Image: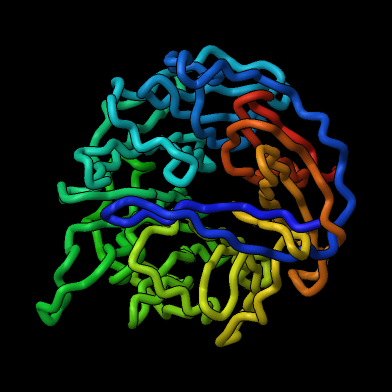
Length: 413
């Protein structure tokens, strides 16, 4: 059976739809889809800052085992926690004032970070104009989410920042990365550059302040989210859609050497030449042996669809890209999670109005995969599927318009 999915590619003058196909691969032992639902109201009438009205939901487990959610709804960002794996939630705490133009899609969802000291950092973007320029704001809590600081800009440059990502090392230092337009259109030699830049900054005080912003690479795609992971050595690793010569928008991985950007390594030569916005960011996982694992989407001249590849520790290149999803079907919105010696992969497939989430597991660091297994489905709007772990157990977090929020166990402890 052939399943087709369409993605919008957006240009300055409008958009058009593209169609692609991807293949399915082996997968593992997965528990039935038995998550709990928090049903969402109709999006046109649901304007309250409650979970039922969310457009995107970000999950995190805190050190004490509570499930925390940050979501965008009603022009605000809110947080709440659950002590029973998502069946019930605490009263929501609204973080910051209402914004009429919240940048709150699934690609640019609110970010929630809880470090090992229990300090919380929430970040989100607000559009400033009709050209998709935005400002990233963040707020912190030192009292277990009861109160949050006054929202403040993450970066000191007012041009545009979007798609923030955060990670903390074992010492509680917070690394932030985002897409920044402060140097848009201008290269070191004065020549015009397309796209934007990959920017970063460190916080040494639990997110209360950040060091001066630095540019890690330019040019980068201005409209795709990043993938970020913290290695066991405390060095951040970023996967992003880089702009290569000739307008090629393929993916690259940047590994940091202490506080400075290190080597940039191309993930695959897809040859996707496009003067537009894919709006389809990559996923990244770093395993305990130092291996990198990347999932991404492309409409390149050399391959089309969603793919996965890995790089062994110390290697200078990635493995041959492996198609994600069933042969002849469309896969997208992939997410990766490393949990001990297991690597999990989930993605969405859309057939007409039906969206299905599938999962696979590898027990040998990406060399072989178990049979793909259907986990959940919906017939209306859905957020991207996200993987999280807690006490050795892996969970799928998924928010849909019809079924609401669901937390689904993918494996037994």
